[in-house]
Image (cartoon, rainbow, N blue to C red; front, side):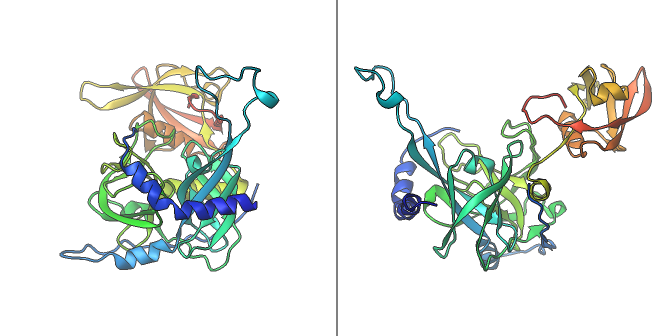
Length: 369
């Protein structure tokens, strides 16, 4: 990492308060193989009356880091501006642009989870700790379809986060959001789980968000959402806001998804998902319950070879009922490419069991499932 970037990192920490003050007055809009051990914790007992979250905060804060990035961008001149003799030296020179976010240490040997959008396109990445120490980071792998990325640093004395049991998260549970909002430094905010299983938001391809009213602001992306015991339940990733700041509607990627992505990236350096080559639509029956109907089948794809036809109603995959199109996408994606799966469809009033071999999902958004 060059000396210029480290000077930039020091400068960012020094002007953090000024940046926060400025932004608060403005409006806005909406192939490695590693084996690591992830600690799990049981959910804390329900509490009544006044309660301090200092122990949970102190436990989790040591696992949350600030992520600073630097990239070279070309700034185009606006309309009406031009050089009288053309662009000198072939055009405008790239200029350095910095950004910030947060991350969560997930192993004692230096692996860190963060958002893909925090590090996407970065030329240089630095990770800073609450103690003021910093380290250069490299990208191990990314998964744009869940907006997750895994970084690696070389450092000692790291404290990895403890992962909560995903099934223990319920609406009304108290939670803490920890990150680096506006670059002012590590910050803890308090809220509750407002909802679980949020999807169809158009943020990521695969969505199963935890919604929270804990304040999440720019710079919190990639940071931790933890429960009352300090165990990680999600990676903060997005907010719904008409002002650019927190309005009590924040979203975190649950640890169930984060763990799957982390394990695949550490094993192969990438994430692979199952694919059948179908186009599905959701319709409502007279009783209001949704049905998933096959609208199209890619010729020669796994579904076509396995006997699925347009008009089939998908009932279950591997004996697990399919509730809607989102559930269908997630169930197919969870199947390893090349593995066999059973799919039950209803055709002409009769249920028909089929056996298919999943293909590999293309690395493009908007593809058939």
